[in-house]
Amino acid sequence: MRGNNQHPIQSPTQSTDASKPLLQSAEALVDTHCHLTLEQLGEDPDRYWARAQRAGVVQAIVIGIDAKTSADAVSYVESREGLFAAVGIHPNEAGTASEGDFSAIRELAQHPKVVAIGESGLDTFWDRSTAEDQEYWLARHVELAIEIDLPLVLHIRGAYPRAAELLKDSAERGLRGVVHCFAGTGEEVLPFVEWGWPVSFSGILTYGKADNVRDGAINTPLEQCLVETDSPWLTPAGRRGEVNEPAFVVHVAKRLAKVKGVSLEEVARVTTANARRVFGL
Ligand SMILES: [Zn+2]
Image (cartoon, rainbow, N blue to C red; front, side):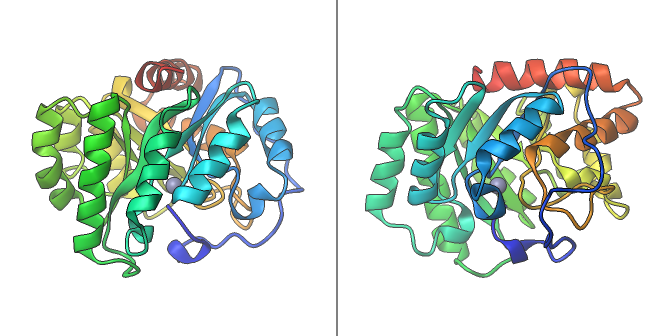
């Protein structure tokens, strides 16, 4: 996800010196998608990473949305244990992306701490870039991910059937996709589940109106589930009004446990193993 205004259902405005104590997980969790170097979190990423570690987050993937923020993510994680980066051009940035930007992404992807390409994908909710541009850059990211054998983190919003149609051949050619921040329906998740791709759940899973996303979680075997915050956006229910941060992935894991009818410990154990397997952490 990208941009403060991208999710009208959630617009965090306050800082996180919050009021409430951090919820802690007894087990290790991995935040598979956070924008630790962007916006509010980027003002003091070390503080947020320290808070995350105190809450039981042992590893996290810091993700870029364009060439510059991808480079920022790589240089931030470079010397920090437990942190990894993903590099790519977000669909909302597809309209302004250049060949030079993509060359920079390709070069960054060689870095040993880069564990995925992305986020790339399709987003019909915002009209900051055309479908044509989004599909062009998605195809380029797909080729790069296959070529260098890294997973591709997919941002899909309002376009799951189209994404499934576009990605089917690539899935057969060995593309390892990760459906980040799933926000579709129980039916829309099925093609990706069938391809064996992991599906990542964010704070949306905790929202009152998000039964469709919970249906998606029901239809995704726990062995294919990942958890993430997509921070600083999409603050989980229970922390509303605060800036989202990696520590809050515990809230997502708790809700996933409830949806799956298993313990938080089980969700932590399985999703952490999944994240380590998928991204080679
Ligand atoms: Zn994102």
